[in-house]
Length: 206
Image (cartoon, one colour):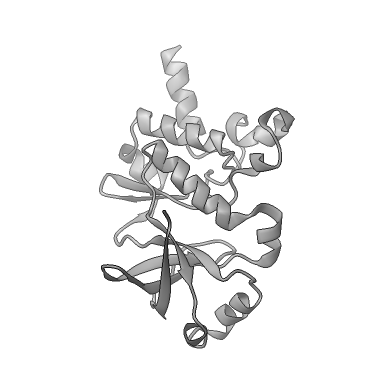
């Protein structure tokens, strides 16, 4: 069951993120307060590809693969909390029809995965499993230059699955060859972060 927590304060910390510009907030949990990263998806995005549902479903599927992911939750913003937000954030919230936002537990000390720097974090079994997950959920966003993997001293967390699960409205057989570029097209900036390494492993086995 996904927990629902109430946000009561924002934390002063810059978070890496794309268009969602995530917030770091403090929430009340059954065990006291904790920090969660919260995404505010715009209404157009919600309508087009259901990012909140994608995040929740993909997080649960990844757990079934024994892939490490942050603990998810749904975060509620009260009127009094919204009044404390910066004007730009308040504006984004006012344009969002959702009463709940996707959040995941914040883990201090993690940084973005960089292949040349964190190569030893992932053995061949781990990268094969993560690649298999991303093919299954059609996650086109774990790519060169944007790993969506956090690492810390040999540990990792897989994050940001909002653009996955496009197969909800379209079956695998209905996607054209060019729509699987993240798997097969080496040299593309849209290629999966582990595709080159898996390619080298496969050639070594052959």
